[in-house]
Length: 353
Image (tube, rainbow, N blue to C red; front, side, top):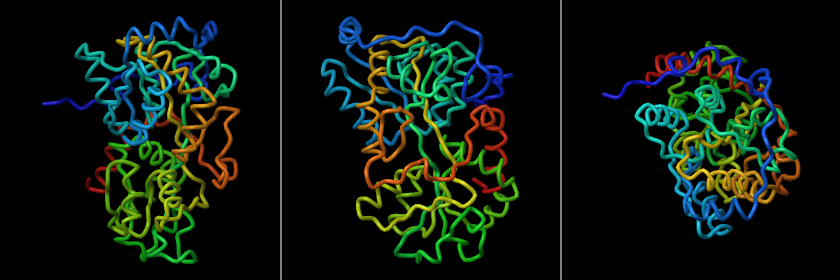
């Protein structure tokens, strides 16, 4: 029988970890900035492979992997994809068993990097682009990870089923009787996006909001990528949470969906990426991490995923809404880390899932 993994069981006192976006930084020497050199490329080619653990939609991860392989054709990218909360448990279980299969780790729940860093599982690496173009609040002060992408968890509706003037304008509107049995949302025990979203909504609106929402006969799915798909298919009229970027991509593809940026503010999620100290392909991991955070890769990534980049040189794709024009809820990874187990327990009890 598999033992459940809890964050508080893995680590306590995480607020003192030295993460600029999480807590006050530790007093340590700044990590050395590393360039993509011929020597690094040669060493990575000898390893021939890099293994990425990530919650990215598999088509997204595969497209990213193929882009890396096109740039470095002698290095294969192997992607292991699952929801962030499941990924967190998998990493803990693998390390407990002495299994070290992953080179690079990306999560949709930034709080995961708190215990990973505290446990000494991450290796420092700061590329030239990270050092020069990433704001301090979006990169670890000790060089253990950097924010590779930002995205939002919005409301959305099916335009064939809901008129614009009738659409919900905020989270409070979702509690109206007319939306009972017509909504879909993700699950915080599976999805890091929904875990982070749930934390922000509990902080801003209280558990009373979820108690009332749970009585609305909401369709429950796992990943944050599932609600936009259910919406586009017309299986539900309104998306109570889920990722905004899939809604944007579906709309651009001609599907009858429309995002709504809630009046209370839109939950914000960051996806950091780091390298494991036990990486079986350490040079390929460093090359991938450096490549991922270049301006060219970041621009390519946000253009085809409709997510956001914190790289100072990256521009929003023409025709898309800028994140600076959206009222946002503040992210707090340390708060999520402290509250994650409570969120899973209370949410499961309320929604009976």
